[in-house]
Amino acid sequence: MSARSIFSLLDRVGWTKLRHARFLVAGLGGLGSQAAYYLAAAGVGKIGLVDFDVVHPSNLQRQIYYRAGDVGRLKAEVLAGRLAELNPEVDVEPYNVKLSRDNGLEAVGRYDLVVDGTDNYPARYLLSDACVIMNRPYVFGSIYKFFGQVSVLSSQGGPCYRCLYPKPPPPGTVPSCADGGVLGPLPGVVGCIQAWEAVKVFLGFGRPLIGRLLVMDLAAMDFAEIPISRNPECPACGENPTIQELQDYDIFCGINPTPSEKEISPLEVKNMIAHGEDVLLVDVRDAVEREICRIEGSIHIPVDRIWEMLDALLEHEKVVLYCHRGVISRMVSEILREMGYGNIWSMKGGIEGWAETVDPSTPVY
Amino acid sequence: MSVDVDYTWVLQNKKFFSNLFRGRYVALIGRDVVGVGRSIQEAYEDARKRHPDGKKTPVLLKVDEAGDVQLMMGMAGG
Image (tube, rainbow over all chains, first blue to last red; front, side):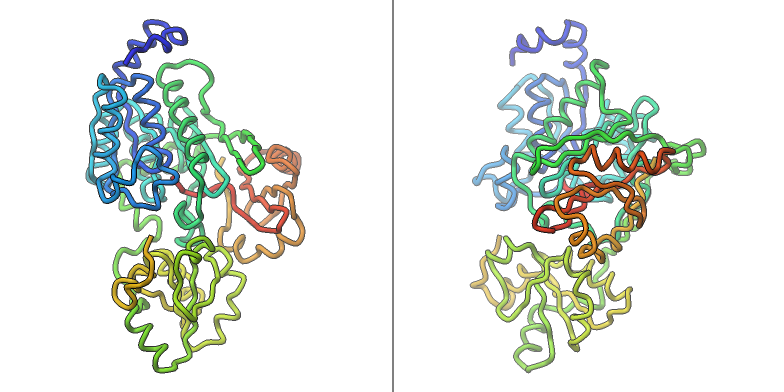
């Protein structure tokens, strides 16, 4: 691809440097795929693409480099193909893996910087710690509903992700992008800014978002900057760091990968209802998802409102929460049980599990 | 410095925010409301006036005109 348009912006030294740059884009959803596409177009020499997930139909409205025909295919491989079509001079390396304590440092160490497009806390803490340990800039971006944040972390003495967010939120208290809903232009804007910041910090021009958190509300089109600074007591990048190697980030973030005793199968739920047991079935998904499909007889309390309705849940012998795939409802039920609500259960597999084992006529998405 | 936010407390007190701060951005440190404004910058500047030492970074909430309360920071969506 011709870089003539870039020559007018960068001098030859900068352009040559960019052609030898190695950027790792982790997470190839709305943010990562957008950033990667612009970085390839700009002529970044080598781009690593990390994601172990496949393209889902629900991704297509915001992850615009995937097409309907890509559903079910690995994102890293699909996107690698798209970048190669766009700019054959870029060396693209797809990794169909989940980053972990075993491979995180090696992956980050092979690149000059990391653009974070992941959608979960364990991955974000892992990438941040790996960047601090390997001394790589970490271009942070995140989105939710109408809101976005961007910053350049772990760079030039600035703060790291742990300086800003020392602790992850309790599981289930902050909905994911898929649960919260997001429209494509938001990750488009944020992913573009991340790509731009990555180029700036790598080439050393302009004023990268180091020590500054860009916060935006696209509903109001309101952008603001919040100064952020390094925490001298940060366990990762502080004066006496204790994090010298990667950890198990699922445990750090309170995510229990083992099946919960308080999970109940869709078939059991169906039988309880059929036998007239005092069961309140609660759909904790977003209103848009509920319009697509629902279990008859269930009530709707979106996950972010359930905390206001706790007293009502005590009135029933059993309360069964369900979500899309059973992940959010399990997290919420575990938190509520810890708070003393012993009658709360989670339906295993969510409404997808229900469609699979109880009612195949239920639309899946 | 770091963001100090009690996520569960925010969720449990949505009605409080909804009733008092409709149409505004709210800056929180821990469980304290430290700033309110019609724009993000205004809420942040309000927080800086009350906590000039800057030892904590406030977290921002948006309470829209319908009273819906949304946390603007700390999410992990990608």
